[in-house]
Structures are given as C-alpha cells and as structure tokens.
Image (tube, rainbow, N blue to C red; front, side):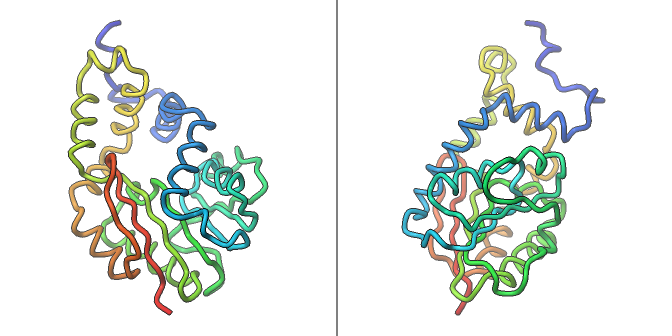
Amino acid sequence: MTRSKHREPAEPNHAPHDSWEEAYLRFETPEEEVRKFIERLKSMGAMKWPRDSKIVELFCGRGGGLRALHQLGFSEIEGIDLSSSLAAEYAGPGKILVGDCRQLPFENTSKDILIVQGGLHHLAALPDDLDQVLAEAARVLRAGGLLLVIEPWPTFFLSMVHTLCRSRLIRAVSTKIDALATMIYYERNTYKQWLDHPNLVLDSLRKAFPVERCHFRWGKIYFAGRKKA
C-alpha cells in the first residue's frame, strides 16, 4: 500500500462530518456499537435502574445507545442530536429529536436519566459549552436524577493507542487503527482540547453533579452524578 492511502487529504473530497462518519463505520459496525453500549451500561449499573425510567441519550447520533437501552428493557427512551441525517437513520422503538444539547427541548425536572457517550469531546468551547450542557442536564433531570458520562480520557492506554495511530505501518495492517486515526484527524481540534484539559472537565462535572461514581478505564472516563435533591 502506498503512503498516500493513509495520509488524510488537506482538502477532503467530502465534508469532514461525512468523512468522520465513514471512518466510524469502518471502526465498528452498528451491531458492534450496540454491544459495546450494552456492556458499558451494565458496568455503570443499568440493570438496577427502573425499567420505566425516562431516559434521554444526548449526542445520540444514529441511535445506537437507544437500541442498547431497548435491548436492556427500557421503553421510555429518547435521543437528541444536531445531525438530522444521523437522526433519520434511526428506526428503533424510541425517538430522536434534532436539536442542540446546550438548549434541551424538555421541560424542567421531566427526566430520570441522561446519558452521554462520546459527545462532549466534540464541544467547541471549554468550559462554556460544557457548562451549558451540564446546566441544561441539571434543569431537565428530576431531583435525584442520574447523569452518566462516558468520554475519552488521557490515560496511559490512550497514549499508547495514539502512538499506534501515528504509525503508517500499523495503519496499513489494521483497519480499526486506520479508522480511528482518521476520526481523530477530523475531530482533532476539539478532541485535543478535551484531552488537554482534564482538570477543567472534572471540575465542571463535579460542580454540576455530586459524584456517585467516577473511574478511568481503557482510555475512558466513566462518570455518574446525581442531581441534588
């Protein structure tokens, strides 16, 4: 394979968003994504949540998280994402609204659980955008409601993954690494900003929601916080 095959173009033929989505579909299939989400949710205690909980997945994309929630037995599920094209791909039992997670279209104290899986690190302005999302989450959650956040985090494991992504040889033999490197390229500004400011991110999360659990594993932060009663 030639070197140029694994070097992102300075001027992509497609819009960056489309190119990112194409890379993501190379990284994992929709079925693999759903299985991943199910395992994540189980690890964060989802099997103990009431099955009639009113749940919203923020930055939900094409709805893989909603499919995972449905398979776990939840029925009161919604998603919200800025992308109308991704929302249109969803054909599950819940519904996806097109909208901005900094201005949630839900009534005060109307939801039991809000979930974010890989959306916050796409925010353009830290901490302002993050604080707006968290303030909106606090507004729509009922007293004692749960916010669950799973995002990339600057661990040793992730630094090793980034090293692999910089290797043209590894990218030539690994579809997943090549796809991941492409995704990182197209979201590089917000991705780097997020990883460069872990203390700022943690401060915002902890100020907005008292911590129920928070741990770091395989290059991710797993944060669960409860709205104050």
